Image (cartoon, rainbow, N blue to C red; front, side):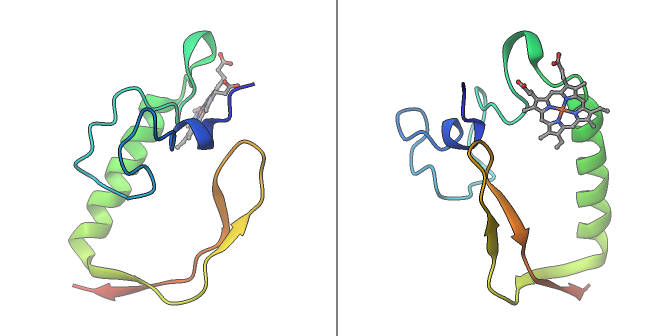
Length: 90
Ligand code: HEM
């Protein structure tokens, strides 16, 4: 079984894998799986995300984490149970 959350942070593939870096060349990530079961909805998901982030960026100056992030325990995915944030309008 492939652990997607772990593979996307594999230091043999990614330098400084824990650092969020929007400029990172992300080719080869497995967030949408791989091979024959590759996510069929990924184009929709990418489009929706682009639209949401663009709409947010036009209205919000900054996003701050204002509380303790709580992880949700999972064997395969990395995820949060809660991540309290505050949006500062532009
Ligand atoms: C950010 C959003 C999404 C993420 C991170 C994601 C992630 C994934 C991953 C990792 C797999 C592979 C699972 C495996 O190998 O067993 C998968 C499969 C799949 N996804 Fe997504 N997905 C997303 C959005 C969507 C959307 C919007 C749809 C439908 C509109 C969708 C439909 C599917 C389907 C039908 C499969 C099964 C494909 C197959 O087994 O051949 N996904 N997705």
